[in-house]
Image (tube, rainbow, N blue to C red; front, side, top):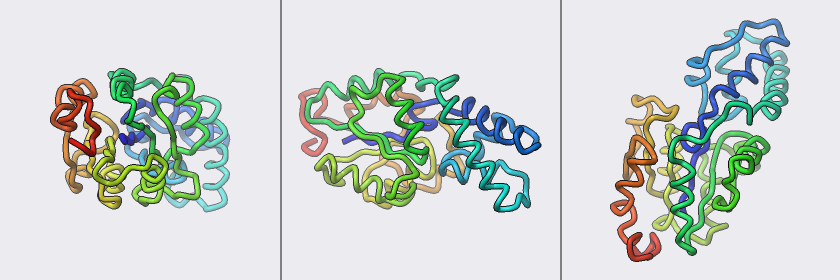
Length: 228
């Protein structure tokens, strides 16, 4: 099974996250935020994103009001400017040519916008299950979500790969004992990513495609990952 992160890995989502944040801040009379500010705050779910973007000293009750507003706005605008990362759709589609391979998404993004993005961008034919960050399974780096996906797929640690761009992705792979592919060019900072182990590294899906036979040596002969 291949498990993908969403924000920064499969999708470029920052413009719509910024729109939702600025609409929520505008309602409370607060100054808007930049794309760079959102980029630096992303990765640990909606609540942490809002907490990082709010002015220091924001009272808890005000924070909750902003968070509720952000969630409402984001569900409405999350399809406006978000795009698939270059090569992502082709990569996922090619991996689905093996009938035994399951693919899934594990993200700290809430479940509702996750499902909207997967459906809108045509990934439902290849992504069998998506687990968001607001479920009972918790958020990365808690391994519960990844372990639930392995149970769903009937796979073990040796036959599971996680593809991600952020420290939470590499951390959850380590916590669950699975190999990680570090996908650069997303939202994770190199100084954060360098603190975690990874089995393979690529700067784009095109580069990952080039090295795939090293990741999965049996790919050319149709062998499953566990047998490679």
